[in-house]
Length: 518
Image (spheres, helix red, strand yellow):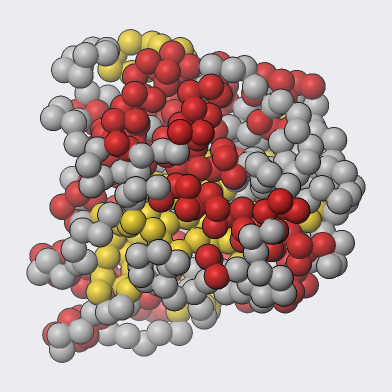
């Protein structure tokens, strides 16, 4: 979202000036692509996790400012709601035992943060939607104390012109009219980043779109929305509706929502940035007076701050990212499909599945997007969110060459086709990570089990006091809290009284990889 933002210019000439600045940024991006100015292949991945704060009774705690003050690490940041934090893990190269290293860094960092949160009677919880949240917890008064969130809320509400209507129906129905975008803060996710070259970007993005439904099938953990059981993964419909600036009449006309799966396969990264300008008016602006074309003429690398900020207010499930690190521009695919947690082992298993599967599909001789209609991929995503592991998906007939479509139970598709592909993609030399045996086994053992069906038992009991990061071990994914081991166990690897080095700014603990800059 940028370090400093201002409200968009909504007088007629101001809107035109802002659109012109965005067009300048898009032209500069096209020149960078044409001049092949982007970073060489580095096979880097990165990870962000949005977290919840809860008390010993499991109820949300609106105190991220106090917790962040005690954590005192730039790797932990605010998120939209006062009950949210975000942790950013430094980039890693996808090779060797990288997922083992990631798991240890996550457990150490989350343990440290949980210990610091405990100083103000709060705990860190990883789950896609905190089941104990109720609608009154998320009003504008509970937005984080940060001007960018206040401005974003004001501009989105002004664009909509009326309350945001949340209406999600599954096993039960939840309806609520919100005077702010605050209900979006209920949605906490894992964001998986993959740095790619411009030439490989389209293949990776297309593959990520194709497998989004499968990610939900194996990773759904958020069936409860403000006390009601709705979809097996309720974040996507809630996020869409909580950020939907279209009045009902515009939605009926087919105007695209800002939370968007997309509508076609792509052939290059520029198409996504261009669509974002063509379809969506800007909401915010930066205080940056950079002239990106002049910077290019002078031999420099533009920050493209306006374009980056605008891109950050369009919530694609697979978002294109432009950034500059150490003076060199690069592109990333940011996968935003998965809910947070519920355990570190789940996060790592989901990451192994995603990175391996995307690599395998992106390198197939006849790629999946030549055989799977985009409309089917979008419908699969919706079906997976509604039904989780009970979903039946449309998929190309097995064999790799056929374009004919079949309807196949999601569990069977994952077990018989996608898990083997993910393993092959992960094991490929110089490509993806070989998943740790434990977490590969976790993917194998959890896909067929009807754990999401156990959601009908009701929301989980809150974790007992003194068991941060989740000693509650109920057998359903939706009812599991926190880390895969206790905070006390993980704390033994953290240095007391200071943030752990494994998630520190600057260089990664292994390999000297620079931290990404936004």
